[in-house]
Amino acid sequence: MRALLFKEWIKLRPWLALLVVGHLTFAVWFFLSMRQEFRVEHAEIIFHQASRIGRLFYDDLRYVPLVTGALLGVAQFLPEVSRGRLRLAMHLPVPLGALMAGHLALGLAALLVLLAFDLGALAVTVGVFFPAPFVASAVATALPWMLAGVAAYLGAALVLLEPVRWRQALNLVVVGGVIWLCHLSNAYGAYDLALPGLVLLTVLIAPAALLAAARFRDGAVS
Amino acid sequence: MTSAETGDAGSEPRVSAAVAPAAVAVEGLTHRYGPRIIHEDLSFTVGTGRILGLLGKNGVGKTTLIKILMGFLAPNAGRCRVLGEPSHRLSPATKRRIGLVFEGHLAYDFLSIAETERFFAAWYPRWRRDLFYDLVDRLDLPRTHRVGHLSEGQRSQVVLATVMAQDPDLLILDDYTMGLDAGYRRLFLDFLVHFARADGKTLLVTSHVVQDMERLVDDVLILRRGSPPLQTTLDDFLGRFRRYRLPAEAVPAALPPSCETLHALQPEVDGSLSVFAFAEPAAVSAALAGHGLNAGMLIETPMTLEDAFVGYTGTY
Image 1 (spheres, rainbow over the protein chains, first blue to last red):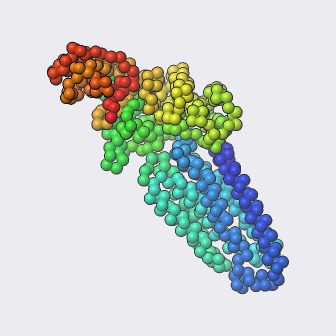
Image 2: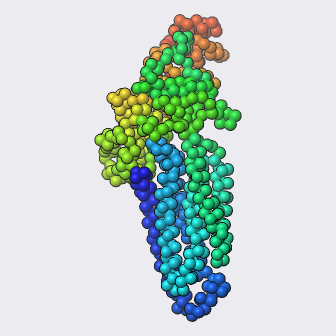
Image 3: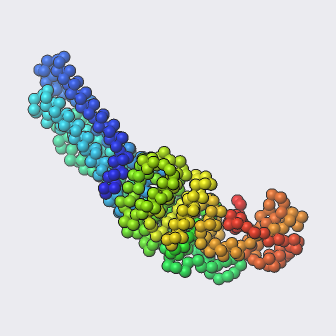
Protein backbone atom coordinates (compact mmCIF):
# COMPACT_ATOMS: atom_id res chain seq x y z
CA MET A 1 0.00 0.00 0.00
CA ARG A 2 3.00 2.31 0.34
CA ALA A 3 3.43 2.00 -3.42
CA LEU A 4 -0.21 2.99 -3.85
CA LEU A 5 0.33 6.00 -1.61
CA PHE A 6 3.35 6.92 -3.73
CA LYS A 7 1.33 6.78 -6.96
CA GLU A 8 -1.61 8.71 -5.54
CA TRP A 9 0.72 11.34 -4.11
CA ILE A 10 2.39 11.89 -7.50
CA LYS A 11 -0.99 12.07 -9.21
CA LEU A 12 -2.69 14.33 -6.69
CA ARG A 13 0.09 16.61 -5.50
CA PRO A 14 -0.61 19.45 -7.97
CA TRP A 15 -4.28 19.30 -7.06
CA LEU A 16 -3.55 19.06 -3.34
CA ALA A 17 -1.23 22.06 -3.62
CA LEU A 18 -4.00 23.98 -5.37
CA LEU A 19 -6.52 22.96 -2.72
CA VAL A 20 -4.20 23.80 0.19
CA VAL A 21 -3.53 27.25 -1.27
CA GLY A 22 -7.24 27.69 -1.92
CA HIS A 23 -8.27 26.71 1.60
CA LEU A 24 -5.56 28.86 3.20
CA THR A 25 -6.66 31.80 1.09
CA PHE A 26 -10.28 31.18 2.03
CA ALA A 27 -9.42 30.99 5.75
CA VAL A 28 -7.50 34.27 5.63
CA TRP A 29 -10.21 35.96 3.59
CA PHE A 30 -12.89 34.64 5.94
CA PHE A 31 -11.05 36.00 8.99
CA LEU A 32 -10.47 39.38 7.37
CA SER A 33 -14.07 39.71 6.17
CA MET A 34 -15.34 38.86 9.66
CA ARG A 35 -13.04 41.46 11.14
CA GLN A 36 -14.37 43.93 8.61
CA GLU A 37 -17.95 43.19 9.71
CA PHE A 38 -17.04 44.11 13.25
CA ARG A 39 -15.29 47.27 12.09
CA VAL A 40 -18.29 48.65 10.23
CA GLU A 41 -20.98 47.47 12.65
CA HIS A 42 -21.35 47.47 16.39
CA ALA A 43 -20.74 44.05 17.91
CA GLU A 44 -24.18 44.13 19.58
CA ILE A 45 -25.91 44.46 16.21
CA ILE A 46 -23.90 41.58 14.74
CA PHE A 47 -24.60 39.38 17.76
CA HIS A 48 -28.30 40.26 17.41
CA GLN A 49 -28.27 39.38 13.68
CA ALA A 50 -26.53 36.10 14.39
CA SER A 51 -28.56 34.98 17.38
CA ARG A 52 -32.03 36.44 16.76
CA ILE A 53 -32.37 36.82 12.98
CA GLY A 54 -30.26 33.77 12.25
CA ARG A 55 -27.89 35.46 9.82
CA LEU A 56 -24.97 33.18 8.94
CA PHE A 57 -21.73 35.13 8.86
CA TYR A 58 -19.90 32.07 7.59
CA ASP A 59 -22.29 31.16 4.76
CA ASP A 60 -19.45 31.52 2.23
CA LEU A 61 -18.01 28.28 3.61
CA ARG A 62 -21.14 26.35 2.63
CA TYR A 63 -20.02 25.02 -0.78
CA VAL A 64 -16.26 24.95 -0.17
CA PRO A 65 -16.24 21.31 1.10
CA LEU A 66 -18.55 20.27 -1.75
CA VAL A 67 -16.26 21.74 -4.39
CA THR A 68 -13.19 20.32 -2.63
CA GLY A 69 -14.62 16.80 -2.43
CA ALA A 70 -15.80 16.77 -6.02
CA LEU A 71 -12.50 18.17 -7.31
CA LEU A 72 -10.46 15.67 -5.35
CA GLY A 73 -12.62 12.75 -6.48
CA VAL A 74 -12.41 13.76 -10.13
CA ALA A 75 -8.66 14.44 -9.91
CA GLN A 76 -8.09 11.03 -8.38
CA PHE A 77 -10.37 8.83 -10.45
CA LEU A 78 -10.69 10.49 -13.85
CA PRO A 79 -7.07 9.63 -14.81
CA GLU A 80 -7.74 6.07 -13.64
CA VAL A 81 -10.85 5.45 -15.69
CA SER A 82 -9.84 7.36 -18.83
CA ARG A 83 -8.79 4.81 -21.49
CA GLY A 84 -9.52 2.12 -18.94
CA ARG A 85 -6.25 2.84 -17.15
CA LEU A 86 -7.69 1.39 -13.95
CA ARG A 87 -6.95 -2.03 -15.45
CA LEU A 88 -3.27 -1.39 -14.66
CA ALA A 89 -4.04 -1.14 -10.97
CA MET A 90 -6.57 -3.96 -11.12
CA HIS A 91 -3.90 -6.34 -12.37
CA LEU A 92 -1.62 -5.53 -9.43
CA PRO A 93 -1.21 -8.52 -7.10
CA VAL A 94 -3.70 -7.32 -4.52
CA PRO A 95 -7.40 -8.15 -4.06
CA LEU A 96 -9.74 -5.73 -5.78
CA GLY A 97 -11.52 -4.71 -2.57
CA ALA A 98 -8.27 -3.84 -0.82
CA LEU A 99 -7.04 -1.97 -3.88
CA MET A 100 -10.12 0.21 -4.21
CA ALA A 101 -10.48 0.68 -0.44
CA GLY A 102 -6.86 1.83 -0.44
CA HIS A 103 -7.56 4.40 -3.16
CA LEU A 104 -10.63 5.69 -1.33
CA ALA A 105 -8.89 5.76 2.06
CA LEU A 106 -6.04 7.84 0.69
CA GLY A 107 -8.38 10.31 -0.99
CA LEU A 108 -10.61 10.52 2.06
CA ALA A 109 -7.62 11.10 4.33
CA ALA A 110 -6.51 14.05 2.22
CA LEU A 111 -10.06 15.40 2.11
CA LEU A 112 -10.62 15.04 5.86
CA VAL A 113 -7.41 16.97 6.56
CA LEU A 114 -8.69 19.83 4.41
CA LEU A 115 -12.16 19.71 5.96
CA ALA A 116 -10.70 19.61 9.46
CA PHE A 117 -8.68 22.68 8.57
CA ASP A 118 -11.86 24.41 7.37
CA LEU A 119 -13.67 23.55 10.61
CA GLY A 120 -10.66 24.72 12.60
CA ALA A 121 -10.49 28.01 10.69
CA LEU A 122 -14.24 28.46 11.23
CA ALA A 123 -13.97 27.73 14.96
CA VAL A 124 -10.99 30.04 15.43
CA THR A 125 -12.50 32.91 13.45
CA VAL A 126 -15.90 32.67 15.13
CA GLY A 127 -14.18 32.22 18.51
CA VAL A 128 -12.15 35.38 18.04
CA PHE A 129 -15.16 37.58 17.30
CA PHE A 130 -18.11 35.86 18.98
CA PRO A 131 -18.78 34.47 22.44
CA ALA A 132 -17.97 30.78 22.97
CA PRO A 133 -21.52 29.36 22.42
CA PHE A 134 -21.42 30.69 18.84
CA VAL A 135 -18.44 28.44 18.08
CA ALA A 136 -20.35 25.26 18.85
CA SER A 137 -23.29 26.54 16.82
CA ALA A 138 -21.10 27.37 13.83
CA VAL A 139 -19.37 23.99 13.88
CA ALA A 140 -22.71 22.18 14.21
CA THR A 141 -24.10 24.16 11.27
CA ALA A 142 -21.03 23.45 9.13
CA LEU A 143 -20.88 19.71 9.87
CA PRO A 144 -23.52 18.76 7.24
CA TRP A 145 -21.58 20.89 4.73
CA MET A 146 -18.46 18.88 5.54
CA LEU A 147 -20.48 15.71 5.09
CA ALA A 148 -21.57 17.02 1.69
CA GLY A 149 -17.87 17.29 0.82
CA VAL A 150 -17.32 13.65 1.74
CA ALA A 151 -20.43 12.65 -0.23
CA ALA A 152 -19.15 14.65 -3.22
CA TYR A 153 -15.79 12.87 -3.06
CA LEU A 154 -17.28 9.39 -2.74
CA GLY A 155 -19.96 10.28 -5.29
CA ALA A 156 -17.35 11.37 -7.84
CA ALA A 157 -15.55 8.06 -7.32
CA LEU A 158 -18.81 6.12 -7.61
CA VAL A 159 -19.96 7.86 -10.79
CA LEU A 160 -16.56 7.68 -12.49
CA LEU A 161 -15.94 4.05 -11.63
CA GLU A 162 -19.38 2.91 -12.79
CA PRO A 163 -19.14 1.48 -16.32
CA VAL A 164 -22.88 1.18 -16.94
CA ARG A 165 -24.39 4.43 -18.21
CA TRP A 166 -27.84 4.11 -16.63
CA ARG A 167 -26.33 3.19 -13.29
CA GLN A 168 -23.98 6.12 -13.62
CA ALA A 169 -26.95 8.47 -14.12
CA LEU A 170 -28.82 6.89 -11.23
CA ASN A 171 -25.78 7.20 -8.95
CA LEU A 172 -25.45 10.85 -9.90
CA VAL A 173 -29.07 11.46 -8.87
CA VAL A 174 -28.66 9.57 -5.58
CA VAL A 175 -25.43 11.37 -4.67
CA GLY A 176 -27.01 14.68 -5.68
CA GLY A 177 -29.88 13.87 -3.32
CA VAL A 178 -27.55 13.17 -0.41
CA ILE A 179 -25.71 16.45 -1.04
CA TRP A 180 -29.02 18.31 -1.29
CA LEU A 181 -30.09 16.87 2.07
CA CYS A 182 -26.83 18.12 3.57
CA HIS A 183 -27.67 21.68 2.50
CA LEU A 184 -31.39 21.60 3.27
CA SER A 185 -31.46 23.78 6.37
CA ASN A 186 -29.35 26.43 8.12
CA ALA A 187 -31.43 26.43 11.27
CA TYR A 188 -29.54 25.87 14.47
CA GLY A 189 -29.85 22.25 15.56
CA ALA A 190 -31.69 21.27 12.38
CA TYR A 191 -29.39 18.29 11.79
CA ASP A 192 -29.06 17.12 15.39
CA LEU A 193 -31.27 14.11 14.77
CA ALA A 194 -30.69 13.73 11.05
CA LEU A 195 -26.91 13.78 11.07
CA PRO A 196 -26.38 10.08 11.96
CA GLY A 197 -28.70 9.07 9.14
CA LEU A 198 -26.91 11.37 6.72
CA VAL A 199 -23.56 9.97 7.83
CA LEU A 200 -24.88 6.46 7.15
CA LEU A 201 -26.13 7.46 3.69
CA THR A 202 -22.77 9.01 2.90
CA VAL A 203 -20.78 6.05 4.18
CA LEU A 204 -22.90 3.70 2.04
CA ILE A 205 -21.57 5.39 -1.09
CA ALA A 206 -18.18 3.78 -0.40
CA PRO A 207 -19.27 0.12 -0.81
CA ALA A 208 -21.36 1.18 -3.80
CA ALA A 209 -18.14 2.51 -5.35
CA LEU A 210 -16.45 -0.83 -4.67
CA LEU A 211 -19.27 -2.63 -6.48
CA ALA A 212 -18.94 -0.21 -9.39
CA ALA A 213 -15.22 -1.03 -9.54
CA ALA A 214 -16.06 -4.76 -9.62
CA ARG A 215 -18.42 -4.12 -12.55
CA PHE A 216 -15.65 -2.14 -14.23
CA ARG A 217 -13.32 -5.12 -13.85
CA ASP A 218 -15.89 -7.59 -15.12
CA GLY A 219 -16.39 -5.57 -18.27
CA ALA A 220 -19.99 -4.49 -17.73
CA VAL A 221 -21.23 -2.46 -20.68
CA SER A 222 -24.10 -0.01 -20.98
CA MET B 1 -17.36 -20.91 -33.33
CA THR B 2 -16.50 -24.27 -31.92
CA SER B 3 -13.47 -25.94 -30.48
CA ALA B 4 -10.17 -25.27 -32.21
CA GLU B 5 -9.39 -28.03 -34.64
CA THR B 6 -6.59 -30.12 -33.22
CA GLY B 7 -7.19 -33.60 -34.47
CA ASP B 8 -6.65 -35.93 -37.40
CA ALA B 9 -4.94 -35.11 -40.68
CA GLY B 10 -7.84 -34.42 -42.98
CA SER B 11 -7.81 -31.85 -45.72
CA GLU B 12 -7.04 -29.15 -43.15
CA PRO B 13 -4.28 -29.57 -40.56
CA ARG B 14 -5.38 -30.82 -37.18
CA VAL B 15 -2.14 -30.82 -35.30
CA SER B 16 -1.95 -30.35 -31.57
CA ALA B 17 0.46 -27.58 -30.69
CA ALA B 18 0.29 -28.09 -26.98
CA VAL B 19 2.38 -30.91 -25.65
CA ALA B 20 3.61 -29.04 -22.57
CA PRO B 21 1.22 -28.38 -19.65
CA ALA B 22 -1.20 -25.64 -20.59
CA ALA B 23 -0.51 -22.13 -19.31
CA VAL B 24 -3.87 -21.12 -20.74
CA ALA B 25 -6.75 -23.55 -21.08
CA VAL B 26 -10.05 -22.46 -22.59
CA GLU B 27 -12.85 -24.99 -22.64
CA GLY B 28 -16.31 -24.51 -24.07
CA LEU B 29 -16.10 -20.74 -23.84
CA THR B 30 -19.25 -18.94 -24.86
CA HIS B 31 -19.69 -15.19 -24.82
CA ARG B 32 -22.32 -12.94 -26.30
CA TYR B 33 -23.22 -9.28 -26.25
CA GLY B 34 -26.99 -9.28 -26.08
CA PRO B 35 -28.23 -11.55 -28.87
CA ARG B 36 -24.91 -11.33 -30.74
CA ILE B 37 -22.80 -14.43 -30.22
CA ILE B 38 -19.09 -13.64 -30.21
CA HIS B 39 -17.71 -17.02 -29.16
CA GLU B 40 -19.57 -20.26 -28.87
CA ASP B 41 -18.06 -23.39 -27.36
CA LEU B 42 -14.52 -22.19 -28.05
CA SER B 43 -11.73 -24.40 -26.75
CA PHE B 44 -7.98 -24.10 -27.09
CA THR B 45 -4.82 -24.26 -25.01
CA VAL B 46 -1.52 -22.44 -24.87
CA GLY B 47 1.26 -24.75 -23.76
CA THR B 48 3.80 -23.56 -21.22
CA GLY B 49 6.77 -21.98 -22.94
CA ARG B 50 4.92 -21.61 -26.24
CA ILE B 51 4.22 -18.39 -28.10
CA LEU B 52 0.75 -18.28 -29.56
CA GLY B 53 -0.43 -15.67 -32.04
CA LEU B 54 -4.14 -14.99 -31.92
CA LEU B 55 -5.13 -14.00 -35.44
CA GLY B 56 -8.37 -12.97 -37.01
CA LYS B 57 -9.98 -10.21 -38.96
CA ASN B 58 -11.70 -7.32 -37.25
CA GLY B 59 -14.88 -8.29 -35.45
CA VAL B 60 -14.20 -11.99 -34.91
CA GLY B 61 -13.82 -11.57 -31.15
CA LYS B 62 -10.08 -11.22 -30.59
CA THR B 63 -10.51 -8.29 -28.23
CA THR B 64 -13.31 -10.05 -26.36
CA LEU B 65 -11.16 -13.15 -25.96
CA ILE B 66 -8.16 -11.13 -24.80
CA LYS B 67 -10.34 -9.26 -22.29
CA ILE B 68 -11.58 -12.57 -20.91
CA LEU B 69 -8.06 -13.97 -20.69
CA MET B 70 -6.81 -10.79 -19.03
CA GLY B 71 -9.58 -11.08 -16.45
CA PHE B 72 -11.52 -7.99 -17.50
CA LEU B 73 -14.57 -9.73 -18.81
CA ALA B 74 -16.44 -12.61 -17.26
CA PRO B 75 -17.44 -15.19 -19.89
CA ASN B 76 -21.11 -16.17 -20.14
CA ALA B 77 -20.25 -19.85 -20.07
CA GLY B 78 -17.32 -22.23 -20.24
CA ARG B 79 -14.00 -22.40 -18.46
CA CYS B 80 -11.09 -20.11 -19.03
CA ARG B 81 -8.11 -20.93 -16.83
CA VAL B 82 -4.89 -18.97 -16.79
CA LEU B 83 -1.98 -20.58 -14.95
CA GLY B 84 -4.51 -22.92 -13.41
CA GLU B 85 -6.97 -20.33 -12.09
CA PRO B 86 -10.18 -18.85 -13.53
CA SER B 87 -9.07 -15.85 -15.56
CA HIS B 88 -11.51 -13.41 -13.99
CA ARG B 89 -10.77 -14.49 -10.42
CA LEU B 90 -7.00 -14.64 -10.29
CA SER B 91 -5.28 -14.73 -6.94
CA PRO B 92 -2.65 -12.06 -6.24
CA ALA B 93 0.08 -14.75 -6.39
CA THR B 94 -0.99 -15.73 -9.91
CA LYS B 95 -1.35 -12.12 -11.03
CA ARG B 96 2.32 -11.67 -10.13
CA ARG B 97 3.18 -14.33 -12.71
CA ILE B 98 1.24 -12.64 -15.52
CA GLY B 99 2.34 -9.58 -17.44
CA LEU B 100 -0.23 -7.65 -19.45
CA VAL B 101 0.34 -5.21 -22.28
CA PHE B 102 -2.90 -3.40 -23.00
CA GLU B 103 -3.92 -2.04 -26.37
CA GLY B 104 -2.58 1.50 -26.75
CA HIS B 105 0.30 0.83 -24.34
CA LEU B 106 -1.57 1.87 -21.22
CA ALA B 107 0.66 3.49 -18.62
CA TYR B 108 0.40 6.10 -15.88
CA ASP B 109 0.89 9.37 -17.74
CA PHE B 110 1.43 11.32 -14.53
CA LEU B 111 4.44 9.24 -13.46
CA SER B 112 7.97 9.76 -14.72
CA ILE B 113 10.03 6.86 -16.06
CA ALA B 114 11.80 6.47 -12.70
CA GLU B 115 8.54 6.75 -10.77
CA THR B 116 7.00 4.08 -12.99
CA GLU B 117 9.88 1.78 -12.15
CA ARG B 118 9.62 2.55 -8.44
CA PHE B 119 5.86 2.03 -8.34
CA PHE B 120 5.74 -1.31 -10.14
CA ALA B 121 8.91 -2.67 -8.50
CA ALA B 122 7.16 -2.62 -5.14
CA TRP B 123 4.61 -5.23 -6.25
CA TYR B 124 6.85 -7.83 -7.85
CA PRO B 125 9.41 -9.79 -5.79
CA ARG B 126 11.18 -10.94 -8.95
CA TRP B 127 11.45 -7.38 -10.28
CA ARG B 128 14.44 -6.92 -12.61
CA ARG B 129 15.51 -3.31 -12.36
CA ASP B 130 18.49 -3.90 -14.62
CA LEU B 131 16.22 -5.18 -17.38
CA PHE B 132 13.91 -2.19 -17.03
CA TYR B 133 16.66 0.36 -17.38
CA ASP B 134 18.49 -1.63 -20.04
CA LEU B 135 15.44 -1.08 -22.21
CA VAL B 136 14.37 2.45 -21.31
CA ASP B 137 17.88 3.95 -21.19
CA ARG B 138 18.11 3.19 -24.89
CA LEU B 139 15.53 5.93 -25.37
CA ASP B 140 18.22 8.38 -24.26
CA LEU B 141 15.73 10.30 -22.15
CA PRO B 142 16.18 11.57 -18.60
CA ARG B 143 14.58 9.20 -16.12
CA THR B 144 12.60 12.15 -14.79
CA HIS B 145 10.75 12.40 -18.12
CA ARG B 146 6.99 12.09 -17.69
CA VAL B 147 5.40 9.10 -19.40
CA GLY B 148 2.59 11.35 -20.60
CA HIS B 149 5.11 13.38 -22.59
CA LEU B 150 6.56 10.38 -24.42
CA SER B 151 5.79 9.52 -28.03
CA GLU B 152 3.76 6.36 -28.65
CA GLY B 153 6.92 4.48 -29.60
CA GLN B 154 8.80 5.62 -26.49
CA ARG B 155 5.82 4.78 -24.33
CA SER B 156 5.70 1.28 -25.81
CA GLN B 157 9.30 0.75 -24.71
CA VAL B 158 8.50 1.83 -21.16
CA VAL B 159 5.46 -0.46 -21.08
CA LEU B 160 7.44 -3.42 -22.42
CA ALA B 161 10.26 -2.71 -19.97
CA THR B 162 7.75 -2.64 -17.12
CA VAL B 163 6.20 -5.96 -18.10
CA MET B 164 9.55 -7.65 -18.75
CA ALA B 165 10.98 -6.41 -15.44
CA GLN B 166 8.09 -8.15 -13.64
CA ASP B 167 9.69 -11.37 -14.89
CA PRO B 168 6.29 -12.97 -15.51
CA ASP B 169 5.83 -16.56 -16.59
CA LEU B 170 3.02 -15.60 -18.96
CA LEU B 171 2.67 -12.45 -21.05
CA ILE B 172 -0.54 -11.42 -22.76
CA LEU B 173 -0.13 -8.66 -25.31
CA ASP B 174 -3.11 -6.98 -26.94
CA ASP B 175 -2.14 -5.46 -30.27
CA TYR B 176 1.25 -4.13 -29.23
CA THR B 177 1.80 -2.72 -32.73
CA MET B 178 -0.94 -0.11 -32.50
CA GLY B 179 0.47 3.36 -33.06
CA LEU B 180 4.05 2.19 -33.60
CA ASP B 181 6.14 3.08 -36.62
CA ALA B 182 8.27 0.40 -38.29
CA GLY B 183 11.35 1.22 -36.20
CA TYR B 184 9.67 0.99 -32.83
CA ARG B 185 7.70 -2.05 -33.94
CA ARG B 186 10.94 -3.79 -34.82
CA LEU B 187 12.56 -2.71 -31.55
CA PHE B 188 9.58 -3.93 -29.52
CA LEU B 189 9.51 -7.23 -31.35
CA ASP B 190 13.27 -7.82 -31.06
CA PHE B 191 13.22 -7.35 -27.30
CA LEU B 192 10.09 -9.41 -26.92
CA VAL B 193 11.42 -12.31 -28.97
CA HIS B 194 14.73 -12.30 -27.12
CA PHE B 195 13.06 -12.11 -23.72
CA ALA B 196 10.57 -14.86 -24.46
CA ARG B 197 13.05 -17.24 -26.10
CA ALA B 198 15.84 -16.74 -23.57
CA ASP B 199 13.70 -17.32 -20.51
CA GLY B 200 11.14 -19.78 -21.87
CA LYS B 201 8.19 -17.46 -21.33
CA THR B 202 4.68 -18.24 -22.48
CA LEU B 203 3.22 -15.57 -24.73
CA LEU B 204 -0.23 -14.96 -26.08
CA VAL B 205 -0.19 -12.11 -28.52
CA THR B 206 -2.46 -10.35 -30.99
CA SER B 207 -1.39 -7.89 -33.62
CA HIS B 208 -2.83 -6.27 -36.69
CA VAL B 209 0.58 -6.62 -38.30
CA VAL B 210 0.46 -10.30 -39.15
CA GLN B 211 3.88 -10.29 -40.78
CA ASP B 212 5.48 -9.70 -37.35
CA MET B 213 3.99 -12.91 -36.07
CA GLU B 214 6.12 -14.90 -38.46
CA ARG B 215 9.21 -13.98 -36.44
CA LEU B 216 7.56 -14.36 -33.07
CA VAL B 217 5.09 -17.18 -32.71
CA ASP B 218 5.32 -20.97 -32.41
CA ASP B 219 1.60 -21.53 -32.77
CA VAL B 220 -1.33 -19.74 -34.33
CA LEU B 221 -4.97 -19.64 -33.37
CA ILE B 222 -6.95 -18.25 -36.27
CA LEU B 223 -10.50 -17.10 -35.62
CA ARG B 224 -12.94 -16.91 -38.50
CA ARG B 225 -16.51 -15.71 -38.29
CA GLY B 226 -18.92 -18.60 -38.72
CA SER B 227 -16.18 -21.23 -38.87
CA PRO B 228 -14.33 -23.32 -36.34
CA PRO B 229 -11.09 -21.71 -35.21
CA LEU B 230 -7.86 -23.26 -36.37
CA GLN B 231 -5.07 -23.95 -33.89
CA THR B 232 -1.84 -25.35 -35.17
CA THR B 233 1.87 -24.68 -35.23
CA LEU B 234 3.12 -21.87 -37.44
CA ASP B 235 5.34 -24.30 -39.35
CA ASP B 236 2.45 -26.65 -39.95
CA PHE B 237 0.19 -23.85 -41.15
CA LEU B 238 2.79 -22.38 -43.49
CA GLY B 239 3.92 -25.82 -44.63
CA ARG B 240 0.52 -27.18 -45.47
CA PHE B 241 -1.56 -24.20 -46.47
CA ARG B 242 -0.72 -23.42 -50.06
CA ARG B 243 -1.42 -20.83 -52.69
CA TYR B 244 -1.81 -21.72 -56.32
CA ARG B 245 -2.21 -19.28 -59.16
CA LEU B 246 -4.11 -19.57 -62.38
CA PRO B 247 -3.21 -17.03 -65.07
CA ALA B 248 -5.96 -14.68 -66.23
CA GLU B 249 -6.52 -16.52 -69.50
CA ALA B 250 -7.45 -19.69 -67.60
CA VAL B 251 -9.89 -17.99 -65.23
CA PRO B 252 -13.56 -18.43 -66.14
CA ALA B 253 -16.17 -15.73 -65.59
CA ALA B 254 -17.99 -17.82 -63.01
CA LEU B 255 -15.71 -19.17 -60.30
CA PRO B 256 -16.31 -22.55 -58.72
CA PRO B 257 -17.40 -22.48 -55.09
CA SER B 258 -14.94 -23.22 -52.35
CA CYS B 259 -15.11 -26.76 -51.01
CA GLU B 260 -13.16 -29.11 -48.79
CA THR B 261 -10.28 -29.23 -51.26
CA LEU B 262 -10.46 -25.63 -52.48
CA HIS B 263 -10.40 -23.57 -49.27
CA ALA B 264 -10.77 -20.20 -51.02
CA LEU B 265 -10.63 -18.75 -54.51
CA GLN B 266 -9.58 -15.16 -54.69
CA PRO B 267 -9.57 -13.15 -57.95
CA GLU B 268 -6.54 -10.87 -58.16
CA VAL B 269 -6.49 -7.35 -59.60
CA ASP B 270 -4.48 -8.53 -62.64
CA GLY B 271 -7.23 -10.97 -63.55
CA SER B 272 -5.42 -14.07 -62.29
CA LEU B 273 -6.92 -16.32 -59.67
CA SER B 274 -5.36 -17.30 -56.36
CA VAL B 275 -6.50 -20.65 -55.06
CA PHE B 276 -5.83 -21.38 -51.41
CA ALA B 277 -5.90 -24.95 -50.21
CA PHE B 278 -4.42 -27.39 -47.74
CA ALA B 279 -4.42 -29.98 -50.49
CA GLU B 280 -1.53 -31.18 -52.65
CA PRO B 281 -1.23 -29.81 -56.22
CA ALA B 282 -2.70 -32.95 -57.78
CA ALA B 283 -5.82 -32.80 -55.62
CA VAL B 284 -6.30 -29.10 -56.33
CA SER B 285 -5.84 -29.61 -60.07
CA ALA B 286 -8.37 -32.42 -60.00
CA ALA B 287 -10.86 -30.31 -58.07
CA LEU B 288 -10.46 -27.39 -60.49
CA ALA B 289 -10.69 -29.67 -63.51
CA GLY B 290 -13.85 -31.09 -62.05
CA HIS B 291 -15.32 -27.62 -62.36
CA GLY B 292 -14.16 -27.32 -65.98
CA LEU B 293 -11.10 -25.16 -65.36
CA ASN B 294 -7.84 -25.61 -67.23
CA ALA B 295 -5.79 -26.70 -64.25
CA GLY B 296 -2.75 -27.44 -66.37
CA MET B 297 -1.68 -23.82 -66.00
CA LEU B 298 -1.83 -23.99 -62.19
CA ILE B 299 1.35 -22.86 -60.43
CA GLU B 300 2.09 -23.07 -56.74
CA THR B 301 3.48 -19.76 -55.44
CA PRO B 302 5.27 -19.12 -52.14
CA MET B 303 3.62 -16.93 -49.55
CA THR B 304 4.26 -15.16 -46.29
CA LEU B 305 2.20 -15.61 -43.13
CA GLU B 306 0.28 -12.49 -44.06
CA ASP B 307 -0.54 -13.94 -47.49
CA ALA B 308 -1.60 -17.19 -45.85
CA PHE B 309 -3.68 -15.36 -43.25
CA VAL B 310 -5.50 -13.34 -45.89
CA GLY B 311 -5.97 -16.45 -47.99
CA TYR B 312 -7.33 -18.38 -45.05
CA THR B 313 -9.63 -15.70 -43.67
CA GLY B 314 -10.49 -13.86 -46.90
CA THR B 315 -10.06 -10.23 -47.80
CA TYR B 316 -13.55 -9.12 -46.83
